[in-house]
Length: 397
Image (tube, rainbow, N blue to C red; front, side, top):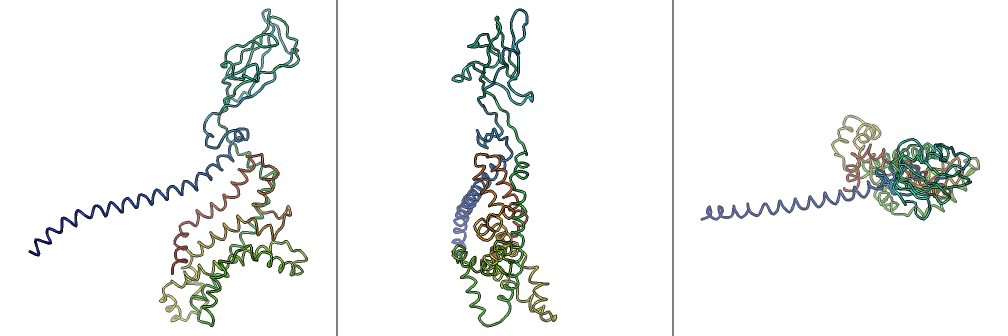
């Protein structure tokens, strides 16, 4: 009987398993779709910014980046030559010319003799002019204006709908780097960001090792204090720090707005998270590694530099990404501790200045903005394989 019941139960279990597997498949599909949605949301603005920064400035002002690969229409007006340029051919007076450059990229779809109806006729057709004669405009921009009587006008215009082919250029970047001071601000951002990223990592690595593996009084209280400092809003400490630093300006030659001040500020703001992240990671390393190092006679410094530090590289890379992105994109701390001197403006401050002075020049703003994000993108993708591993290891104990 037991064997028969077991045999009867087996098909039921087998039939129930596909539903369980199907549920897992549905859940995995939903997760993948959600992840794809987030990737698209993050990628589309970046792609749009890059495309916009490479577009011709005339096209950028009249159409969105998603139309960059399509031909767009633009209404233009052309001034015809004066009567002094007419020639007589076969008993008729003729004026010839070209409305568009001879690069072959743009064509005329329609034209008209009045601004109220610039698309009156197809390109290649003939229309009568109000001041006499008839004009024929071809798609390549060439026109012929003929009249049986001599022209005596001083000013005449023609209107046309121009089919503009997509045009891309890197001249926007040259203009930004050459004329708008972005190049200098780019270097200033590196001057601020590199020390403000490397120094907190070095200090936090030593502090994290001590809090994870060394025994001394009040160690737990120090760890609790570090965790508490993480949640302190940056804005609350700016004014006290600035007053303290201004009081010590004598040590910096009387200058309160120096790189030293912003380095110290970013180091102080970044250390709590760095210590917390690295301490949790180092505390999770196998104890046998440290015990074997002590048996071999290694002191704490030797064990830290030769064993713990190389093994903690994922956590170091995770914090490096966080700190680099934070310092590179910072505007508030840079404004407070560096000010608005032209020779010390960081990239974010320079873009703010461009937004005020060149707010209508989209080609300048988009190329400048993309220059500001290309370095964080390079850093993130270079270290992204360590990012999730180090972040999880430092957050979950």
